[in-house]
Amino acid sequence: MSGNSNVMSAGRVAVLGAGAWGTALAIQLARAGTPCDLWGRDAQAMQRLQAERRNDRFLPGIVFPAQLTPRQSLTETVALADTLLIAVPSHAFPEMLQAIKPLLTPKHKVAWATKGFELASGRLPHEIAGAILGDVIPLAVLSGPTFALEVAKGLPCAITVASTELQFATALAVALSGDHFRAYTSTDVIGVEVGGALKNVIAIGAGIADGLELGANARLALITRGLAEITRLGVALGAKPDTFMGLSGLGDLVLTCTDNQSRNRRLGLLIAKGSDSQAAAKAIGSVVEGIPAARAARDVATRAQVDMPIVLQIYRVLYENMDVASAVKALLERQLKPEL
Image 1 (cartoon, helix red, strand yellow):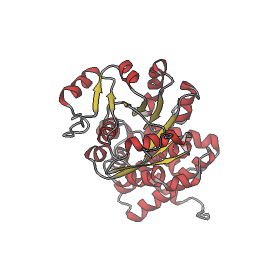
Image 2 (image 1 turned 90 degrees about the vertical axis):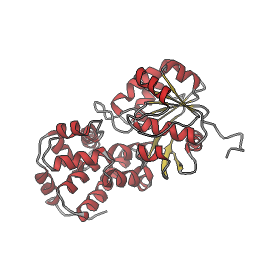
Image 3 (image 1 turned 180 degrees about the vertical axis):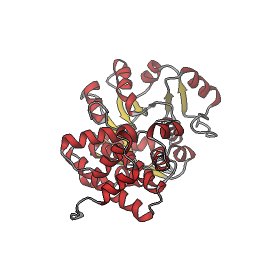
């Protein structure tokens, strides 16, 4: 592909958001040979990253590659970049877009690794980006079964980059891909975003099931039926059903439901042992995206008239103080029906 002059290039990439995932993506881009800048809101923290060449708060012991430059000025970072890759929590995504909007020029392309519905409106990230940035700038989303520390360590993994402009998806995939990191492309932005938004909700349920010691059979039944719910809602919103059998659907769901690196799974484990959702989230100590995602998913499913019984019971546990035993009982007592 590099020999084809018609292929779009991602150029210099700036990752906006210096948490674990943003830093890991910046490390991977630089490791793959892509010139990359990393910006975060905390100027003092970014100064530390510049001096120490690592982000020990989130990724201890991982030294930055030479191609990675931490920066303190958002204006300077955007001006230098050709592609902006936003890696902030979903609640901060609209504000980040508003901050970069006046700084954008015709050369810029914008992508994000942010997952989740907007709580108030139920909009997906591409809808928010389109409303704020318009339809002139190429847009893309990056999602898949990836834990930040494993990416930063250079362990093998694969992701999906989706854009309605396939050239941009391909350019970003090329910029990210290296010896141990493979990026696939897709044009199904809605499907990739829905999979990324809802897997966190199902992962809370998987944590609850394992915390209750319901066994491997129950865990796999929950994952399988959870995937069916995600697919139903995604298709109702305009996604392609095949997308949910890919990395950003089944892959991300299984990873998040089965490994304790997942904050959402750990939240479910704590709830099963008697903690309420607020105490459990405080114990984890960082953003647990599945909590707001459960509320947003319940609302979106209601508007779309899509049946999502697992999501509904998880919502009730999180927001209506329903005890977990009653939630499990409600699911098991539902009327029998064909699987497909």
